[in-house]
Image (cartoon, rainbow over all chains, first blue to last red):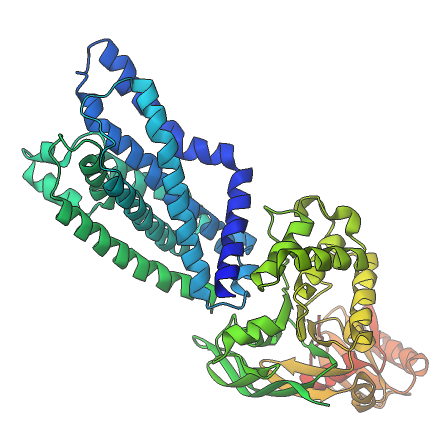
Length: 256
Length: 308
C-alpha cells in the first residue's frame, strides 16, 4: 500500500515534469551547453584555449546540469507549495507518514538529475567533438556518482525549499548558486587550486566540488582528481547533513 | 448513535497566543455539525488538529476511532478535507486532481477513474473534467474541492468555511451539495461565520469564541436560548453621554459608544421612542440595525459582539 502510494506521488511529479519539459530543459541545460559551445567549441577551434581543456570541463558540465536539475526539481515546487499555492496539502493528507512525501521529492530530484545528465553529456560531446581522455569504461562508478550527486543536491533542494520564502528566490540564485558554481571545480580540477592554498581548502565546503571531482574520476580518470574515498565520504556526509536539515524543515512546514 | 469525533480539553498555544483554550466536543456519526464563530475564534485551528495538520499543545482528539496525534496516518485514511483556501493541484486537470487524490489513498486507477467520473457528474462539473483548474469559476472550483475530498469515501468530511468568497448563487449550489451529503448520512463538520449557513444546514452547532465553547445545541434550541427580544442598534453621530431615560416599548437599553442598543418585544413600537430620545438630546441618527431573535442575537448576547 505504502509503495503504491509512493508510486502515485512519483507519477504525479512525472506527469507535471513532462508538461514543463521545455522549461526544465532551459533551466538545467541551456547554461552548461552555452558554456560548452563557447569554451569547448569556439575558443578551442580558434586556438585561444587548448583542446585539452575540453577534457577538464566535460565532467563539470555534466555535473552542473545534473545538480541544477535535482535542486530545482525539489526546491522550486516546495517554495511555491508551502509559500502560496498550498498544492502539496492534498499529498500531506495521504495516509502515509509525512516523511514519505519528502522522500518522494528526493527520488524525483535524483531521477531528474540522472535524466538531465544522460542528455547533457552526449549533447556536450556532440558540440565539442572528440574529447581526449574521455572514457565510458567505468560505468558502475559513473552510475554511483550520478545517483550520489542527485542525492546531495536533492537534499540541498529539500533544505532550501523548506527554508526559503518565494521572495528570496532571486537572492538565492545570486548569493548561493553563483559562488557555488564558480567555486565548484566545474571549469577547473581541484588540483589546479594548488597554488591558492586558502581557496583550495575553503571550497571544500561546497558539495559541487565533490560532484565535479567524482564525475572526473568516473569520466576522465587521466585528469588528476581527489581520492575516490574522500569524494564518497564527503558526499555521504554532506547528504546526511542536508537531509537532516531538510527533513526538519519539511516537518516544520507540514505540521504546525 | 456512535461518536464520530471526541475532543476533550483541547488546547493550542502559538507562542503567547491561545488559539484553543480547553475545548470539549462530541460529534455523532451521521451528524452535520457546525463550528460557528468569528474570525480568530479557533475554528480553523480545531479543524487543523482534527485533520492532523496542527499539533495540539495538550488534550485529546479522536476522529473515526483514531487518536489524531498517535494515529495520524490511520486518521488521514478516514477523513476528507476541504480547506478554507482552495488548494487544487494547479498543474493537473480537474479530473486528474480527483484521480491522483484517489491514488494517494491507495485506490487502484480503474476504480479511481470510475469514482472521479461519477463524482464530477454528481457535482455538476463533468463538462469541466479535462480543463485546467485555473479556468474554473470560484463556485466550480469549490465543487471540485468537495468532489476531490469525497473520492476516497472518507468517514468524516471537514469543510472549513465552504462558501467564503462565493457569489450568492454559487453559495446556494454548495448548500445543495451539503444537503445531499447530509441525506446520505455522512458525518460532516463545517466551520462558518455565517449564521444563516449554520442555521440552514447543521443538525447541531457549537458556538466558539476565543478558543472556548460558548454554547452547543441544535439551531432551534439555540435560537430558543436567544434573548426573546429584537435587538435594535441605533448608531448616532457621536458618543452618547448621560443616563438613558426609560423608553416606551424598550425592555432594556445600553449605550456603547455612539451606538444605542435597545432590546424590545416589538421593533415597530420601540423605534419611535428611540428616535424621539435622540432628537431630544440633539443627536443625529446615522443608522438603525435590527437583529431578530436568531443565532446572531444569541451570539451577541453571549459575546457582546457581532459575528462578522
